[in-house]
Length: 112
Image (tube, rainbow, N blue to C red; front, side, top):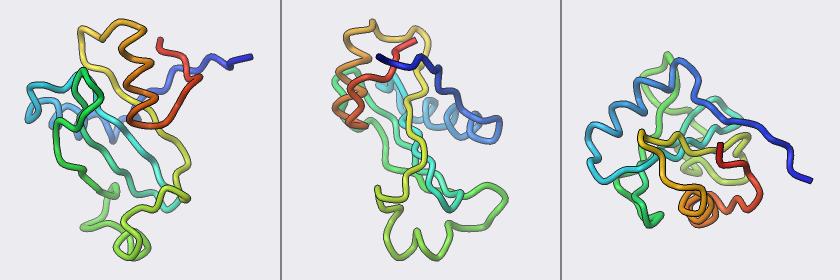
C-alpha cells in the first residue's frame, strides 16, 4: 500500500529551485534533498534522469553549509526527506517514475 503524499518545496527553497531552472534549460525537475542538520542539496535533472546542473548545497539564513556537511558532503545517511520539484509542463507519469528511481532510488512515491 502506498501512502499518497505530494512533496512540495518550502517557501525558502522555491527561489533556489527557480534559479536552478533558469540556469538549466534542459531541466524537467530539481531534486531536493533535506538533511538532518538543516542543510539542503539540490540539482536539476533532465528528462533522462541525468544531471542538468551542478549540485548546490546551502543552509537557510547562513553564510555556508554546516561543519558536518563540510566534512561528509551531506552524507546520504543523514537524509530526512527527498523529492523532485517538477517544472511545468511536468513529464508524464512513466517518465517521472523512471527519473525518481534513477535519481533518488524511490520506487513507490506518488507522481502527482
